[in-house]
Image 1 (cartoon, rainbow, N blue to C red):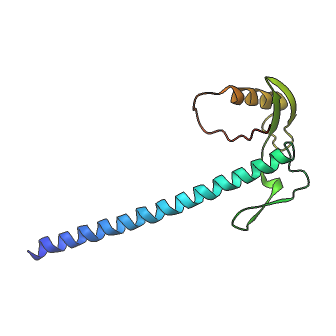
Image 2 (image 1 turned 120 degrees about the vertical axis):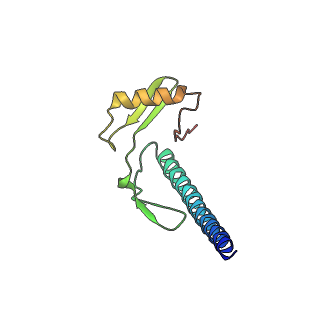
Image 3 (image 1 turned 90 degrees about the horizontal axis):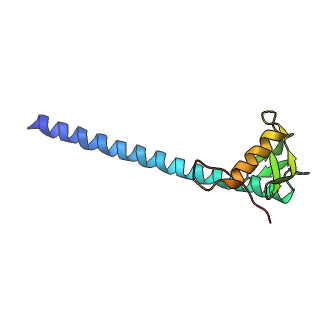
Length: 124
């Protein structure tokens, strides 16, 4: 009888600890994901307002009061009119040349399916 009671107690205690851990990790991941989305949106808005560059902006302030240096981002910028490249800037990354950036931008503008997540900012 005591053996069965002890096993039930251990099982209930283990499940309670597991629930608390899963709940805590879930909350932390949800909050961090939300903060990351806000930071990405803020960076994209800054790039859009300055026509594809950070301009004179040296640091981007997050909603949490943290400042991120603008030179810590690796990105390229392409402006399209239809399928025609109007302007592009690949000076902030060494992994992509102008031709590849234009091809990526054209492919992203034609995408209709959901192959993954593409973060883009469209300015009109």
